[in-house]
Length: 216
Image 1 (tube, rainbow, N blue to C red):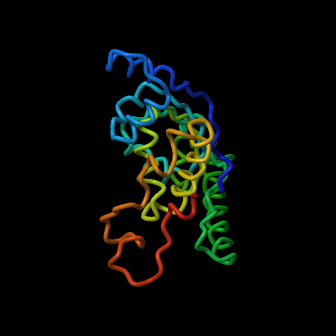
Image 2 (cartoon, rainbow, N blue to C red):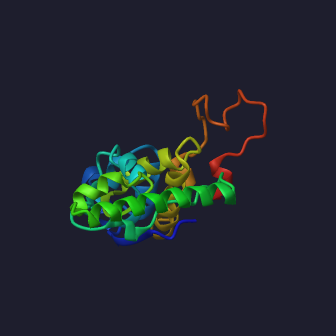
Image 3 (cartoon, one colour):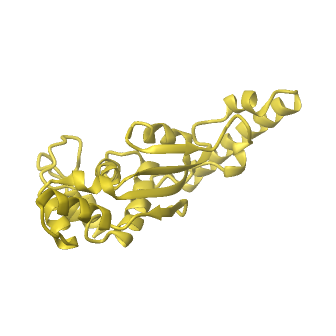
C-alpha cells in the first residue's frame, strides 16, 4: 500500500446534517444522513469538505485532472527539480528484473535532465525530458460526494495499477474518519456491474475476484 497519502483537513458531517434538517423541516441526525445517502441523496455530502496531500506520478496526475470537481494545487515543474520526488516503480505485475529495467530507464532520464541543466537550460526547459513516471506532489480538495464518486471509478480493477493503489490508500483514510459514509456498501462496489471487461461480471467463467472481497 502506498504511503504517499496524507489527510490534511476534513469537516464533520454536522454541516450536512444541518442542511438536511432545513430540507426536511425537522431535526435530523447522523443516522438520518446515512439513510438518505443510502437512498441515493448524495448531494447532502457536498457540504462535507476533505483535503488530502498526495504524491503520484505525472501519469496519474493527468488522470486525476479528469475528476473535474476537485480543486488541485500542484507542485511547480517550472521552478523546481521534481526528480527529487523519485519515480513510480511499484507495479504489482512486474518482476524484479522488469522493475530494475524501469529504474535504469528512469536513471537515464535523470542523467539527460542534469546534462541539459549543465548546458544552461532552465529547470522548466530541461523538465521536458522527464518521463510520466516522475512523481509530483499536490494538494487535492473536494466535497465528500466528489471523493466517493472518484473512489467508485478508481478502486475498480479496470483502473491503472498505480491509481488503484492510490485510491485504496485514500479509501482507507476516508473510511477511518467517515466509517458510516465512506464504505463499500455506500459505494456499491462490484454489485450489479455491467462492465464487460470487469472480471466480476457473470459472462466470464474464471473465478471472480471482486474488489469488494479484497477491501472488506
